[in-house]
Image (cartoon, rainbow, N blue to C red; front, side, top):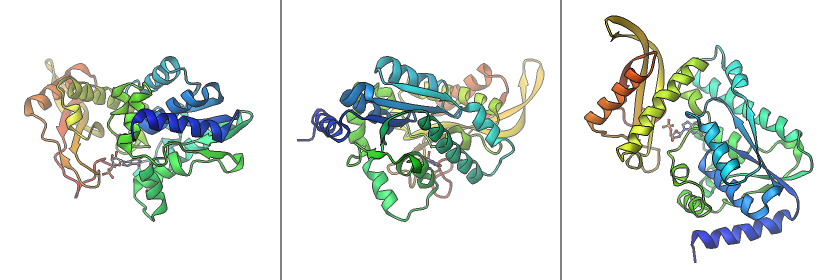
Length: 319
Ligand code: XMP
């Protein structure tokens, strides 16, 4: 019988049998899959689990702190947080091309993860949040951009020289099953049912060159948008929603003066499979309210636009 509780018991028993008293390493990203693996392994092997969380500085508003609060403080998971924002910004300086940015972000992740794991002694296993669709995807010859990054972050992220065995307790599960497991394991619903977030994070939502001040503005605008979607009960009705930072200056009025500031685009889509998508028909009043909040509460943004492109021909992300 498939119930989340049964699947968890079964997975716990299998992991214990597989790793015995060995130490297990897990890369925590803040996403659903790796969080569920962490919660599961915490239940199965407790202190034998060591997580490395690379905070790239390209995560959502306060997301790094939230990951630590949820996983380390509340669930008691052993997490090493690496504050790598400066390294990411340095590596991305002057780089405008989207695919070049993706490569840099992916490569740096592997590099930092390897550095951190090299500091750990007697780790024998690497746990990964691979789920069934990832297995299918890597078996095929797909070359979509999502797949390229997934290969860094999930399926192929095993540092060659470490020769670790793989622990992949979600390998046979679909996303909705993983989510139900997450709730059963005590992860917050809000985290488990979060919209998807791309591996390269805000690195592909700041168009062109990524600068710390752009990322900060984007985080604030995105936070306001998401907060309002949740407050108006629209979050679960959209499949994915986020803000995009446009490195374009536009004129606006501030008090008696004239402002010449940045532009924020809002993107919200409805989709089943993310291969095609419709732009979300959010109420005009709602969009107006979000736009006002962003311009009034933030400094440095003078204009907000809403993306009304479908996929195809546009993609969901802007880069
Ligand atoms: P697009 O923009 O291709 O996005 O319509 C489809 C879905 O994939 C996500 N996405 C990515 N995920 N690495 C990821 O892990 C990436 O490089 C990447 N690019 C897009 C996007 O957020 C959407 O859910």
